[in-house]
Image 1: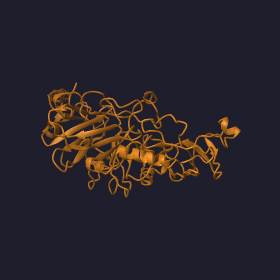
Image 2: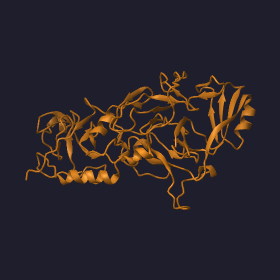
Image 3: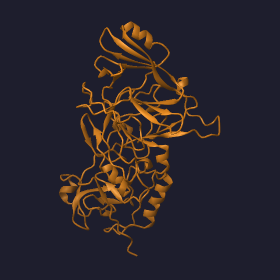
Image 4: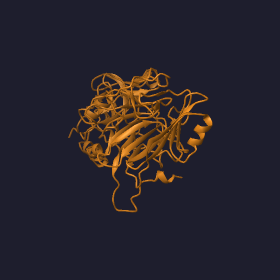
Length: 426
C-alpha cells in the first residue's frame, strides 16, 4: 500500500489534467516490457504534479551519534540519511517536509516508497523469463528525483532513495566524506551516472560527458571502476538538473529523461503508424521473389511474418525472406548468419527489420530509412546517427553504443545502415 505521502496522481477528483514534469523511458524496450507493462513496473513512467507535495529537504544534523542515538533518530517518523563513520560514530541528517517539491523514487524494490520499479535490461531479450536469472546490480532504492512544483518545474536527481522506514543508510564501506561546509555526502555502491547531451534532445544533439551524482546531488567525475572506494573529482561547474535527453544509468538499466516540452516535439504513435503505412503504400518488393513487402503492425513486434522485410546489413538491400545464397556451410551454421546479397554480392548478416515503436527515442519525425546493426530496428536517419554515437555504460567500467529499442551493442563501421528498397515493377 502507498503511504499518505505516496499519493498517486488522481484526475478523477477534478477535470483538470495534472501538470506533467516529464517522462522516464527505459532503454532497451520497444514501447513496452516484453510481457506487458504492469503497475509500477513498465518501460515508461510519467512524472506528474502530485495532489499534495511530498518533497523533503535537509534540516537538523546530528554529529557524533552513538549507534543507539542514531537508531533513535532514524526511528522517528521523518526522513533521514545516516552516514556510518565507524562502529562508534554515525552522523544523521534529518530531512523535513518541503512544500515546494514533489519526490519520485526509482529502484529495484517493489516496496511502496518506490514509484518506478526498474529491473536489469538484458540486451535483445524477448520475455521477462530471459531477465530473471541475472543477478541484479541495480540498487533496491537507486535514486530519487525532485521536481519543483512551480514553473519552470526544475527537475533534480540524487543518488539513493528512502526505504520503507524513510531512511537512507550509508554503511562503513560506502564512499562518504565531509564537505567544505561541514555537511556530509556520499556515493552508493554501484553509483548513479548521468549524461546531459549538448544541444538538448534534437537533431543537433551531441553526447555529453558521463558524471556520477552523489547522495546530496553533487556532480563528480567517474570513479576508476563502478564501485571503487575512491570518489572522482567534484565538478562544480555542472549541475544535477535534468535536461531534455539526459541519460541516467543505474548499473543494469539506463533511463532517458524527456521533459514535457521535449515530448511535445516528439512524433506521436499515430505519426509513426502513418509513416509505417506510407512505406507499405509504396509497395516495396523483394528483388528475388518479386513479392510485396510490408512492415507488420506496431502491436506485432517479435515474430516475423511472411511479408516482413529483411535486410543485408553489409549493404542495406532490403528483401523478403528467401534462401538465395544460403550456402551449405551457412545452412549448417558454421558461418553464423553470414549471407551473400543477390544484388551486390556483399556478404554479411541477413536479419528481419522491425520498426522502432518507442516514440520517445526519436530525435525527429522523419521517415524510418535506417536500421541499426545488428538488430534491424528501423528509425529515422538522425535518430540512428544520434544513438550510434552515445557511449552507454556496460558492466562496471566499459561503454558502448547500443540500439535504444533492444539494447544490443551496435556493430559495423557506423552501427547503422541506410535501407535500399526496390519499388514495384508495374
